[in-house]
Image (cartoon, rainbow over the protein chains, first blue to last red):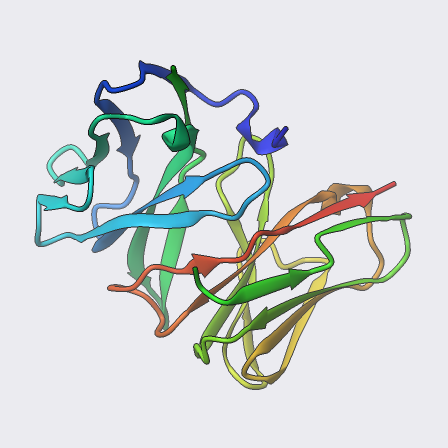
Amino acid sequence: GESVGLHLPTLSVQEGDNSIINCAYSNSASDYFIWYKQESGKGPQFIIDIRSNMDKRQGQRVTVLLNKTVKHLSLQIAATQPGDSAVYFCAENFPALGYQKVTFGTGTKLQVIP
Amino acid sequence: DAGITQSPRHKVTETGTPVTLRCHQTENHRYMYWYRQDPGHGLRLIHYSYGVKDTDKGEVSDGYSVSRSKTEDFLLTLESATSSQTSVYFCAISENRGGNQPQHFGDGTRLSIL
């Protein structure tokens, strides 16, 4: 198995139900946020992103919500499927000296129960 | 999927030996990054490149060096590997330096230093 997935918070969801994965970010100056999905033995895969001038963005079966007041990001997955089982983590992007700094969260493991 | 190939995918070596990991991209993206992923930590930036022969340090650069002689290739070298460098290493690419674009990742190299 993927050692990175050990000791992560786990969300168990019944197949067909909706999933909500949460992320608290750290920097109020962050201006761009990304959600990634990482399956065992694979690299992080881009799911959806959102800029700080938006509070909601929808994709195919996924929605990202951004609450800048409390520095909180959430990923909603509709009609969760077994193939959604993976580790999900958020990333925040903020302007630093001379470049854009990206900070990645440690992730939440989503387990889909068939 | 972004055209990113990391090699080798797995490597076991001994303390004190030099190790070079390769990242090859077919997207012609300007920016390339090396990260390490360890349990309990989000992805941590080792080094990044913003063009051929242009590189800079990330947050965990000690013990690592990089080179970029061609747009498509970014090499990470551990001059004298230590057990603390046992990790999963990911290469990422992006077209610009971020702020409105996600980084895309390869599938990683699992490196064990005995």
